[in-house]
Structures are given as structure tokens and as C-alpha cells.
Length: 536
Image (tube, rainbow, N blue to C red; front, side, top):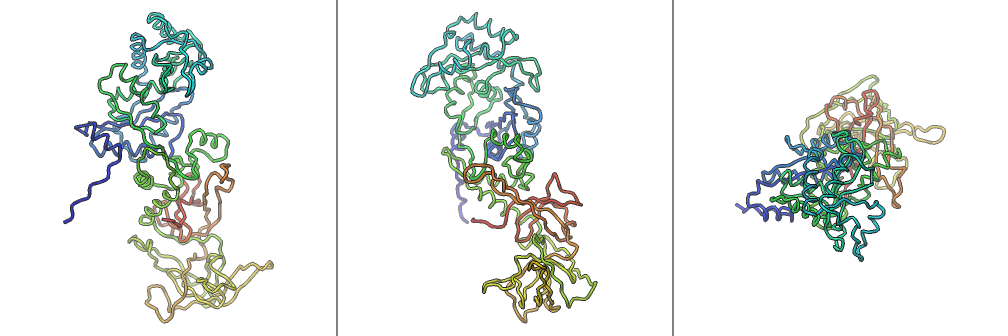
């Protein structure tokens, strides 16, 4: 028996095992700001933090970093909770909010003031920016930097009590204005904002900055490893500075990894919000968006997204993942989970002239050729419809579908032969008169002759449906692609109504899902999850 191969460990797992003798003490978290909806990049972070906690028997927290009341709301909190649960990240009862710690964070600021590591500053935002310096020039110390401990305590309490206007004063950490790392040049840790908070209402008029609050929240919760995107690498010394100087003994370790970037996909929250606000898309759940809500409405399952995240790897270096990889995992997952149904988009009527009038036959067709999902019955009669592209009057040699005088097999049914083409006054083909061979029923064992191809079809009375197809939201120049959605009418076999599932393969067209907003029995609307073509 072969020895099991050792599973490859990413650099984060190596750090964890290096840091913790007892890896069951691992504590991770997903810390979203409730100022927007989650997208697939957030899904990767959720999946990473949760799967590591599960792998090592540790804990996983969901924590809202709600320190900016002007942009946050309960709507976003509820949306994020729903998305995290849908992705399968179980945080048990470990749901936290930065706003739960506002009293503690205020006390920690007092600690820093008393250690002469924080001061109240009167510089305006513009002045502060000018004093900050550049990547090549040191910053200039604030003229208020050397206020006494007593004066700083007095002014900070007055800030808390609402004595000053927004922007009139800030509390800043006293670190090093000559540091080559600009984030260490006396950053603001509290600002005045007379804005009601969606949870604490008007209790506070000063709010901690994210860079100050975030590491202390991690420390309060006992997080061992703070996993974040590579953009926070320069902030790691600041993260450590706050934790150390407030006095926490057990210090979380910040580890950065590359953000998920996907080709032809807009990931920035700001850009997504603008598209929603400008009405370019129907909302945060528009199936063209990479938001979790958009992906769900488009028909992606949590399983597909997790499989995609697991197979894109964890890296320190930025790279762009081809979106076709997401499509690949969608096809691979769905092909063994959904029934295959016949749907015709651009129909041509077929009349089988030698088929008995008013006779309807029930044919048995397998629901999935990949796995055993049983069979369904499909009605077959004198009139039916095929795809217009499956007929050519004067075809090239390699054409393997129906043409005048040739035979094809109707999927799950009979051989038919086209004998006559009927056109309208403009020369468009509107009807094919065909004959069928009653001996050639699929599954009958008939092998007297072969046909070049098999085509799908629907019987008369098929369900008129709407199909939505999607393309990239932006064109090659980065402009909004007005052709990013294409809506067509289709005829779908009636047996689809007998299935309880929401996802289907429409043979030769792709995988589809019932639209969870617009679908009704009287007006069936399906969204294309992914087409059937794959480069993998």
C-alpha cells in the first residue's frame, strides 16, 4: 500500500504551525466593514479564515469593524451575515462588533495619552497632509505634539463630550514623523463625527480610526493570526505598535496575502457601488456583478465558489486569475448535479407528415448522461420545433445536422428525414416537412443504418420562457459594456415543471437557474450560470 503523500502547506499554515505548539488554540476572524455588500474576493478571505480554524480545531469569529457611522448600516450587517452563512462559514455564537468595544477603545486611548504616546492635535486635515511628508521627505511634527498629559486628557474628554465641531481636533498617536513608513508618522486614532451610529445611536461623537481599532479588537478577542490583504503590509508595524503599547501580552500575528484579482471583473467596492447608484445594473444582486448576492442570483452555489477559492492558491504576489477557471469549476460541479433539459432558442417548426394525427407518445429520456438521475417522460407528436441552426438547405460537407433529403436522430426519439422546406415571403425558412421512421426509436436497438448527428427538439406546447445570457461588464477599454446582458425567448420542454430543483442544463446552451427575483410559473425567467464551452 502506498504511503499517503504529504499535503502541500501554504505559507500561512507554516506560520501557524511555527507559532503555536497547540494549533487548536488558533483563532481567526473575518472582519468586514458594514459599508457595502460582499463580493467573491471577500469569499476567499472568509473561506481561508474559516477553513484554517476548522482544520486546526480552532475558533472563527465574524466581527463587524463598524467604526465609521457615516457609511454603515444594519442593512449591510444583515446582508453580510446572510452571505457568510450561505458560504458555510459557521461562526457559532462568535458574532462581534467593534462598537461593542467603544468603551474599551476609549480607555486604551487614555492609556496611550498617559504614556505620552498620544496627543490632541488642532491641525486641519489639509494641514496634517502637508505636515506628513512624502516617501522621500520626512514629515514635520505637529506644533501641538508636546502638549502635557493633563492638557491632552482634558481636551480628549472635551472631544468626547461634544465640545468641538467635526474636524476641529483629532487624537493622534505619537510615534515618529521621520519614519520611512508613512503609516507610522503620528497617525490619527480618533476623529470627531457628530453622526448617529446605527448601533450606539448618539452615545458617541468621537470614533476610533480603523487602523487603531482593528488590531485592538483582534487582541481583545484573542485572535492569534490576523489574515489580511497585501495592501496592509505597510501597516503591520502600526498594528503591532498599538497592541504592544496598550499592553496586551498575547499579540496577534498579522499575515498578509495577495488579493484575489479576476480577469475582466470589477472587484472594487467603490466602483461596484457607483454602477449600482448610476443604475447601470439592477442592484447589488445583479447577476453580472461579482457580489455574493449577484453570484447567487446567477446560480452559483457555495460549493462552486469554495472550490474556486481553494484552487486559486494563497500567495504573497499579486496575480490575475482567469475568470474561465471559475466557469470551469461551475461546469465540473453542475454536470453531475442537474438534469439536462431540451430548450430551443430560435425555433423552426417541424411537421412529421407520416405521423398519425392527434397522437401523442410519451418517450423516456435520461435526465443526466454523467450520473444516474433517473428518467423523465417527454411528449412526442406530429408537430415539434428544432433550432434554426440545426438546419441548412445547402450545407457544407461536414455539416452533421438536418438538411433537405438527409436524416438525423431527434434526441431520445426517432430518425427524421427532411423532404420539403417552406419559406415566408421574405425567403425565411418557417417550416420543415419531414417523415419519421417508426422502427428507429431510441433504445430500440435499431442499427440497420446510421445517421450523422443527433439534434434536440421540443414538442408543440413547449413552455415559452426568457433566458438571460451574460458577458463581461466592461469592454477592452474599461468602459461599461452595454451588451453585457442578452435576453432571448426560448421554448422549453414541459417536463421541466416536474422537477423540484432550480438549476438545469439546457442542452447545447449552458447551465441555467430560475431567476429568484423575476421567475413565475406564468413567466419563467432563467439566468445562464455558465455556457458549455471550456478551455480547461
